[in-house]
Image 1 (cartoon, rainbow, N blue to C red):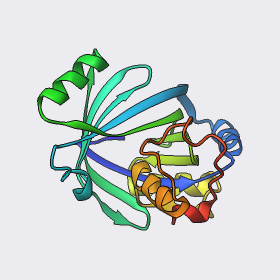
Image 2 (tube, rainbow, N blue to C red):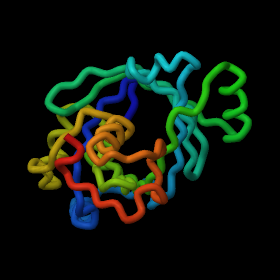
Image 3 (cartoon, rainbow, N blue to C red):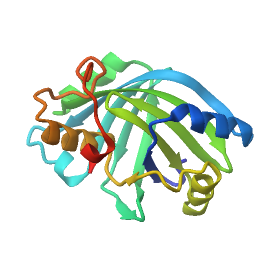
Length: 197
């Protein structure tokens, strides 16, 4: 979870989220947000210079609407740390209009279903993405490693890229023509773990 605008998290590829959920419940993790559909729009400036430099401006809508800014991060053992600031806004369409007036244009739309737990001082999310299932753990490094071990996820592959970075890898390797990471676009497409690397 964010602390002084710093985000530290790990992203793990875990096809069987039901097994992880059972372990979370058995370990006494608290369900803080039931499964919810999430729509995200990432923006870039007119010159398209933000995304290549790891800067993120994102508008997210699930049970609420949030505007997020992230800087490029540092990676160590698959754990990323970076600046993140987020604010809740009351109106998705109005915020989208404001971003447009400031010169930002949509770069990528991506969807997911997310279930959120709290465990051992960290946030554990189960993400169902159009191209596969992932577990993200956000907290301090020690809590992250404890939870990975406690949930028997030490074997799971760690990815240091964002979901959009992984999407670019998948697009290139599979020769996909579409630009958005949506469930409709991935209907009927199987993505193996090797494609993400």
